Image 1 (cartoon, protein in one colour):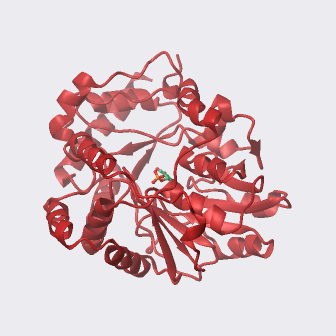
Image 2: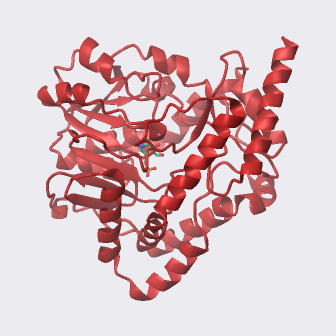
Length: 416
Ligand SMILES: Cc1ncc(COP(=O)(O)O)c(C=O)c1O
């Protein structure tokens, strides 16, 4: 059995949780206060302005949705992409991107990543035939920008539409002219700012929302249920982990992730409906707005945690001044099985995980075209683990995680 094809077992009693939405007393008070004021448009304007300032975005138009994938779908349609148009995305990314492409009826093509887990733009510009390519979606991964000005300029002169996906790069600001056509943010679970779902897109030009006739509000009961579920299973993850792990159905260890995702996505594949593009909920707007008002403190706390990890593990930061680390990835020796490492940490109540199983490895997607060989994707997808990185983590927690991590690595080296 190849362990790395499976999910890392999670601690039954969590001591250091990996992802928790950043909802403190401020967010709960904001919900109570805004419940009576209830002005969604005003909240959208506030968020849009704050985010423009934080990220140094000059675009004038901002549209809010229920998710990042809806924002991507919207930008594809509003930028004029038509059925069958070819759009490049990395294979090492969230399947939500693929769903947005399918929903818009365009044809995905996979591109390889570089050593920073970002789409390899150099290879695209200098080694690939982009003649039929209409658009490229560039996810800026884990806080690192992937927008080398000269490379983007070359793509733009070929008439290619560029959409930047900043779902995992909240806070990383632009330090030169933006050449892209749309900039996406997501406020879903695991993102630096959590809105119990939500997404937005900045565009250069105004788009009429009337064209999006399926663009409806979410059901209030669904919004509340989701929020309550996230409160129990995420915000209070540490406190509820024993109960949750008792009820949680263990994932079938006999199944590979390939089978798992093929099975999961089969229904949407058959119905050709991947999701509905909906409006952001008022509740999400309140949560996002409240956190953004406190963003400077959030950024400083993340930086502190990041530096602490690096100093404890003897690592050097690869981030530039304008970039904000949104995750803490530990790259592990190829010979170390991350499943074993994750299990070891899990025994001490430390929750770790990894994400972005390369989409081209999933059976139902293996026929999707590839613009290059995906060598780096195949090499790098399995050599990292996310260590706990959120605002509920203390410096003592990091000491503990690093101690247990080093303990495992040392025992591995001794056993060689
Ligand atoms: C890189 C990336 N882009 C886009 C998305 C889609 O965001 P959402 O889940 O809000 O649809 C995700 C989701 O996690 C993601 O990781």
